[in-house]
Image (cartoon, rainbow, N blue to C red):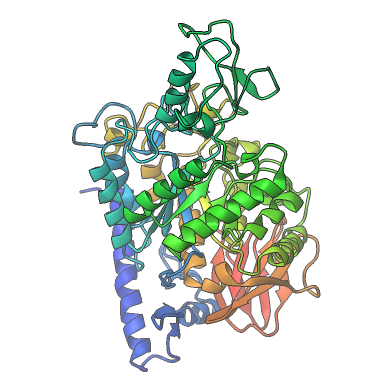
Length: 592
């Protein structure tokens, strides 16, 4: 007898579900099968959850045949975003996917061609499918030429590093993403360049020609004033190498707060700002949809107001070129401080208070805080950000390339806590970010290279996905993974990957989750139970229920009649009957 692999079985099941969903949608739209389908803000069908919810209420929540569950939200259809409220996937190109063919194939370094080949994993362009992750935006960590593997020290802001490919490859990526309704944002480090950047090299070359005690003449070499030089030592300054100069005994120092290979730019200089304007214009003309701004608190050392003023200038500059361009800033500091940066008018700032091993999400998952704290903090921070900029778009994230990966936060975790944490991140409002591999529960901690390990496509080095595996950054330690590789998790409906896919699908199907403001139900919220609603103009209001406890709980619900979707970390699932919502341990439910 022929044996059919689990992957094939799952694909067949999903095809059957798609056909059934399509037939149901057609019937609803024709008025032959009960209430009409809900409409999204653009008039398209947003979801058809009522049939699944009715099945759950009438005791049909489990269909015969093992994994063939009929669950709330089984027929959700994502609403395509036409704004900057999205779900963004952070990609470190170096470690993501090596091209399977072409001039860069097989070199062990990820590249743009490999990313294009694996784009269907992130978003296949078909909202009705569930095989892809469903993210509708990509953040590319720096792709400019650089002497380092991480590339946060650019030598040319208007080129592609050859190890990643060519400008043609980049244009192909932009086209492929836009065809899928995805946006692309580039990582832009404006605080500093590489010492190998031509601006710095021109300044250095000029300074080596100076005669003893000769004054600097910026009309001769304007690039001197692109950076911050001085002739006495100071904290945060590195000594300039003036070997073979006309004045070898004269000492010069340049500001380099991160390390000596990254000289800080003088952002007060009009010529520098003109260069930045040209850089932004170049990439916007290439079709880029926005920028992630590195280290915005470091634009001016220990001068918050000047850094905010520069961010204000940058925001105005970009929006004049492309009004709907999206800007998100990295301000790694306390919430009360980074909230002030919203005063610049920038769209988003990364929400560090919820992130990392000690952030609010991890606190709730570990049990040191209840779900009620999660809900109250959401409402509190939204009010704070709105007081600085009423048009703010929060940028929640759980981990990023500078943090230890989250699967290492929970000892002896079987996937329960890893899943639940991802669900908490994706139920936050705004533009939520997922760091590549987190949807698999990848591990990696210690030095930065370990946090940027190769995407875990497969554990089978002779398998179909082996060609995409990269070697990872130089000097990386061996990182042993806790959960299976992507190809194995894809075939498992109970995997971390399947959970994250469902969370993204729910987030996309109900735009109010992304766009609405959090209103906590104080009567129901307490301890391990959080209940809060979200609504926004043009979006149907939803209510989110979260159980952060190790035991199921029951909630008497009024005002919401339909269990529209749920996220479960185990075989136990949410149910709604006779006005009572049952939430399993670490369960999340969406009602409308």
